[in-house]
Length: 207
Image 1 (cartoon, rainbow, N blue to C red):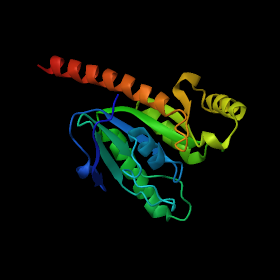
Image 2 (image 1 turned 120 degrees about the horizontal axis):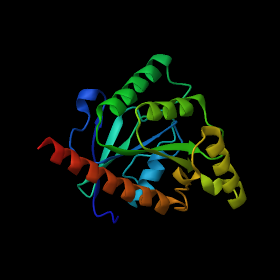
Image 3 (image 1 turned 60 degrees about the horizontal axis):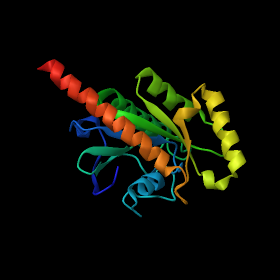
Image 4 (image 1 turned 90 degrees about the vertical axis):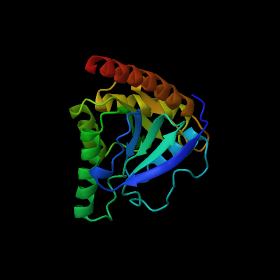
């Protein structure tokens, strides 16, 4: 898919502000500072469309980016930042949970984890949410440029074992050198067409 236009549209701080437009949503989730904004910018070939912060926990809203006027990239609040109060972490959790429950147009969730570290309790909870709501997902292992090729292969297999996932839905990426970015785009294209077919079938059934 060629990116012709990409723009930030708005941020949602509560469920009433969630986008209701019936187009596929591609959701990016992960712990604070895992590289969500960097991956978004790499996918869209933009330097700073999605704000990248050196301060973990700064993204506290659900941020929407409209791509080619026909799909949304959705950046969820980063989780697991220790310096944020427990109350605020709970508020973020409720916001993310509401988004997953109330958005019928989620094509897939890209769950990002740092390839260098074992998954955290928050990572595991996020995956449990996706499984509970039966939302399609891909596991994206970020910062692959920090490891050798053999280490990347080994870590990818390790994450597959930890979560009991098929290796085919796990992708190693690096926003720094664009490694794996095309693999993510292939998943976006696949899930975009799948979601459009589901939405079209749903409209026909309701007629």
